Length: 156
Image (cartoon, rainbow, N blue to C red; front, side, top):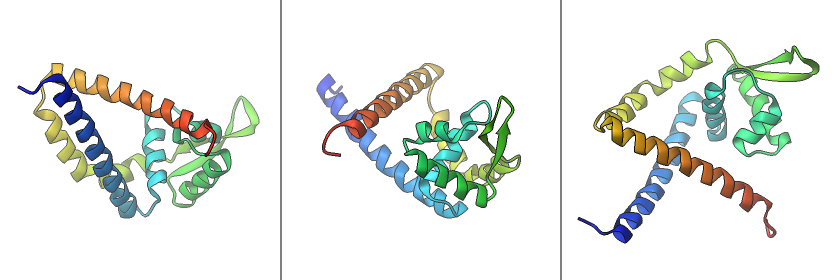
């Protein structure tokens, strides 16, 4: 049985491998659907939102500057994945929403990869899945915090 420092080193190394592999996967998925990798990530994040969001929300979710987020929405709208709607509470503001068939189009592209990733998860117990979900949630929070910290530090 490896000791704690060995286990921590393994988790760190596997996290780096996972990130690199997921970056390659995200690029391949983007190529498959004819989008930029950031666009694919934005679509995935929009799919997790309970409803339409502002371009400012998209900037916050993706870490992009507001102008870049607007261009991203323009690309997604042109590709037929999102639409802009008037905000019923503030007519001066637009909301961005996935078009009705966007989820279906993405699901088709995700069918084989989703099955493969699902097969990996099936091999874990419910208790192990709880630990994995907790780690991913907490690591994502740290990643967002560190991205903000790095983005606001001098020398950028």
